Image 1 (cartoon, rainbow, N blue to C red):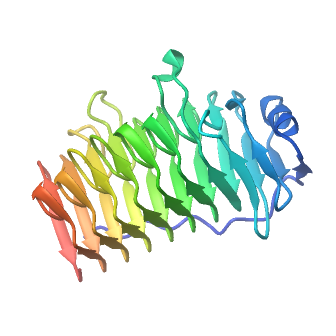
Image 2 (image 1 turned 30 degrees about the vertical axis):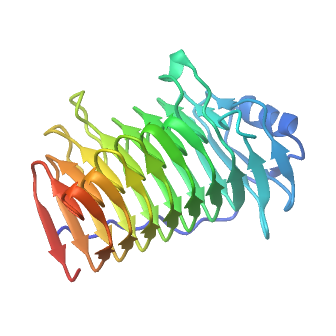
Length: 296
């Protein structure tokens, strides 16, 4: 089986030195006006109720972080939280992210990204955070099109959903998707990818690997393919699907209770997949490509 990818380096202290934001307006101004990298600190216990997406369109790295019990970012069931273009990268750290609901926007592929939409964006990281009750047509938490990598690290995601695909992450012609040291519970997609949807089928570009490393996924589902992961690369991509030192339990789909893969290699290493079900492929469904299990 392929060697596991190297996990990202541990998060470093906020750099450059952080500036504080105490309101939606201050947070929005710091991000939307950024012309260089910016780190923003939200005080523990702060509850920001967003009324619309915060937009970043510059080639900068934005970090929004809190400490201790964390600050809360709340979409109020009315709006997504961030829209990234122009190679903007975003790190969310130590936060409680709740009730993100994607708005309909034809310029950005409809109702996509319950928390973050990236179109021509850089990387997105969600670290040491909780994400609850977020929803979209595609990408209940993160939607990426022609963008960078998505990493969920040491985070808990629960009750997020997609009407179409990617209950947590939808990545199309984008970088790697990594779920590291995280717990995902009861996330769903009505069609494909209860947790992750990765597609490089329609354009001859590469998409990165999908990796679950040291993570636990429970009770996630998709109506058609891949209760956890749906990955279709159709000969264009060099990525792979890797499940390493992880546990997948009680997940379901029409095809591939845990994973649905097409034209890509799947490796399950030192992992457990149990109690999953599907009409075809209770745990794993391989349309084309290969699948290997090692110590699993």
